[in-house]
Length: 140
Ligand SMILES: Nc1nc2c(ncn2[C@@H]2O[C@H](COP(=O)(O)OP(=O)(O)OP(=O)(O)O)[C@@H](O)[C@H]2O)c(=O)[nH]1
Ligand SMILES: [Mg+2]
Figure (cartoon, helix red, strand yellow):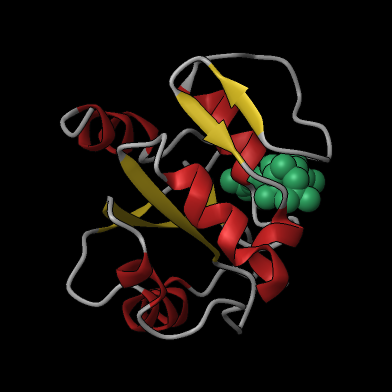
């Protein structure tokens, strides 16, 4: 299950992980695709939806928390991953972007999921996608 803010690249990453070449569209609702649950960014941005995310997480085995490398803030509170009874993995997206700041993104993510693995990916160049897929499948 992927969570993270609006526009952070969750749906595009979902397509890459599933090797689906079609373009991602704006996510309006919980989206079950093969072995992935994609969520609308609004669910991560508004604490009103946290209970819904946690309930949906019971259907999943791995939680991917997405941080856009071009954003200098995290929308999720510190230790957010601890509220989920799942194996958590941090994912930094858009590392191909000229404005990407991977170190800052990693710093932000470490507060959200302390002590958990962090992967860096680009859905444009596919850098890091295979490694991330392997890490997820290990826990399914
Ligand atoms: N440069 C670059 N752009 C990306 C990458 N991944 C996604 N994008 C762009 O970021 C924008 C948002 O991507 P989405 O995958 O729709 O984001 P999302 O997290 O699913 O957004 P919501 O559905 O609104 O929550 C799109 O314009 C994508 O083309 C990436 O790896 N690199
Ligand atoms: Mg989406």
